[in-house]
Amino acid sequence: MTEPAADPKPPESVLKHDAHEHAEGFKVDPTEDDSVDSKLTEIEMAGEEVAIGWKPPAHPPLAPEVRFLHVSRTIHQLITDRNRSVGIFLLVASVLINASAGLLKTELPVDPIISMQAIRYWCLPVTFGCLAVLGVFTSLLLIRTRIGLIYEVAKMNVLLGSASKRVERVNPLSIFYIMHLMVAVLGGASAGFTWGMLSINLFSAKPPVSMGQGLLVAVLYIVAFQAIYYITVLRNTTDLKLSSVRG
Image (cartoon, rainbow, N blue to C red):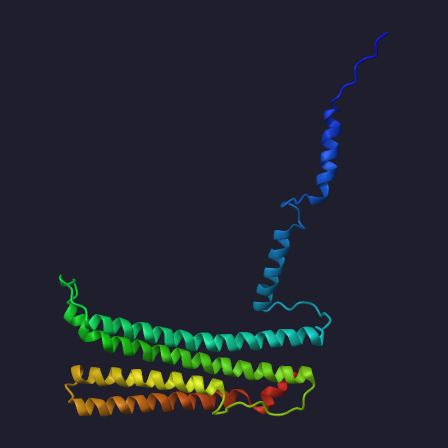
């Protein structure tokens, strides 16, 4: 008698069962409620709900170590924003001035739709006018960043248990003040050049008169933004307001 040959191929159901068991731990069904996408959506919606006034239930406060890391990271971000804003201002200034200098020396064989003479005539007033406007935004951004940095330093002093003292708010030798003064001076010079050149064209002013008017505009620009810096920083970082960070 001959024994029946064994089937070398196991049943298909066994293969399916084994494969299902091995892959079951790695299966992610995006349709389930606890999927990764839904969790990320819940986290994002939590921030939006807080922004519109929804108050979450009471929860234990964060540990001092976690708050310290958060404050230190915020300080680093504020300093990075300060350096980036001043760097962008200087980069734009150098690009615009180099472009204007190139236009003044350009000799095109064919005159474009807009007369090349008109482009050369207006390139410098437009360049300095744009820099004056950009100086306004950069100066205001530096003021806002300075106020935020003062508050974050006050919070860090509280977390470190340092002696309660007034945070240095306006220091003429600080990097913040020097950067703001540099932006104000460059913006004021741009505003003065713009007004001096426009006064010759619009009011037919003589060169000495236009130079005097441009110098006056530059001085007023610098004084105005220096005053805004002092008044805004000192007003928004009083002792009463700084003491509120202890909460």
